[in-house]
Image (cartoon, rainbow, N blue to C red):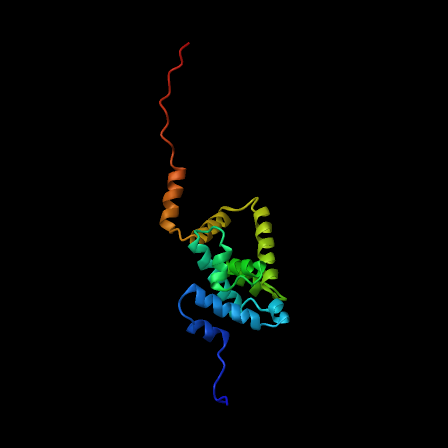
Length: 180
């Protein structure tokens, strides 16, 4: 006989109580993926902990391989090899570009029903911004440079030193007198 007072754990609770290994976290994520109905698989909101947890796991696996391809055997060790490759890639993209994705999702009128739509929208926005880089003002260039420094953990002092070095006049080679 089951105890009626026992409460089933939510996905977040299961993930929090999993051992602190990639394999155990992957096992919890894989079990949750199996539980999701097919409709939920496609309509999972970007803020759902599932995609964030999957993306964080993928990021850690990617760091293990120094940014190279994650082997199939490693995905199998973690139990996430049955999750579609596109879903894993979208979750990884979301985690790596979380601020940009959240900013776009908040500014969207309709919102996003799935992670793939959000990823495609972010990539489309990046292409549009890259094309619009023509004719930027000095203030816009500085703003972009500071944003890139924050993204890549470069201090403002390092940026100033690099800018100073780039703008400093180079030591000129001695001019030879013209011989007529």
